[in-house]
Length: 291
Image 1 (cartoon, rainbow, N blue to C red):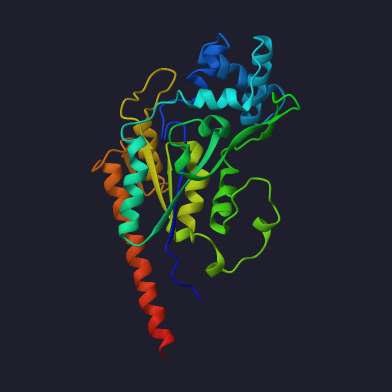
Image 2: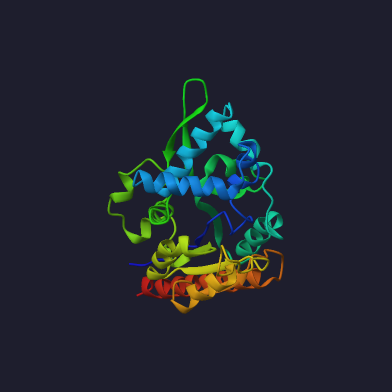
């Protein structure tokens, strides 16, 4: 039996969704005395050479290049890089506002990161405190505290497993026992119908498709300052429009998180709908209980 569940989850990609660009480009790559184009080209070449996952390739290249520059990278080093991340308009005040709005609808709203970027960098940002869990790529550290090996690589397709972790209330990346166990719908932490996924492009397609399949809501966001160029023939908005046309996203909006922005209005309307659906379920099963 489906019963009322007033828990709501918003899962976010990070790069291009909450913050412009890639998080590694703010300080880490410049500290390697490299430009970002060269770094990503070498990462792609490393992946191709070894038939390697692209996320693991860029993480491996980070370690190689840091060693060449005699940079001792530790968890706290990455956290300090995170302190330098800047966000799209309204992001830093958005979480308190949207939490308050959900609470006014008698919903319990929680936020999650699902990113191919680095969890250590996200932990250093000003918004890290708002996330129930940060599912992102991360490093293993040796006995001296230095990064020595990729501990977890979150690529575009395995993002979907973290949606199931949220659904079942598993707030780590290592426990594969609980995630594979059958669990009644009414025992799950957040029903998929109460999911909202926000991402900025094609790398979010598998996660968006899964959220849509199970009755959740997906929003593709674009940076209005992004324009087409020879190296990027489609603008951020063009990519998002394609996601709508292909039924991979339900809505698109600019990356403006300020109050009464297009994105803010969409999110509040979705929250309203979830609250109404849960109210109706509550009414339905109260009536059944009386007979």
